[in-house]
Length: 135
Image 1 (tube, one colour):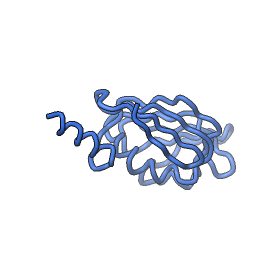
Image 2 (tube, one colour):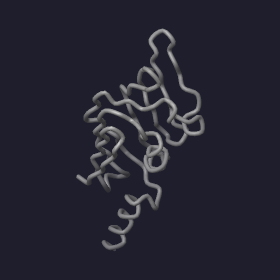
Image 3 (cartoon, helix red, strand yellow):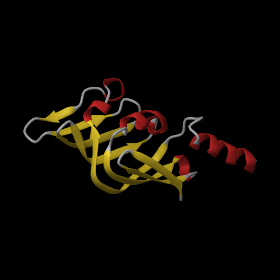
Image 4 (tube, helix red, strand yellow):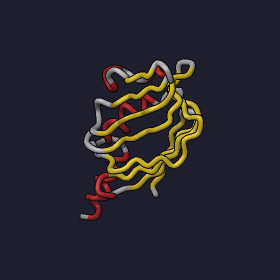
């Protein structure tokens, strides 16, 4: 049974299966910017924009809770808040997230708690380079 569980978790981490996040906790968000062109209508739909403040909010169509809020500046979204969890969040993190974060700049560090606490990871993204490590 233990070998089955280890292989199951390995498959999930290798993106072979769908698995959802229970919690996405941002630990550090420093000058983190995502090119606005990376937010596709297929994955996010139409954003909410406040024309007076340039604040923008994207909601994922792929996960139960998937929102990215920030400010539009020179073709980038300066990210102020990221919240991703629930149904579809594993798909979002393992497919949409890869494309979304291309050419991002700055730093994002978050703790990801996967379903039922089976696995906890630290996600670090620095200038578009993603690194995950098990905690």
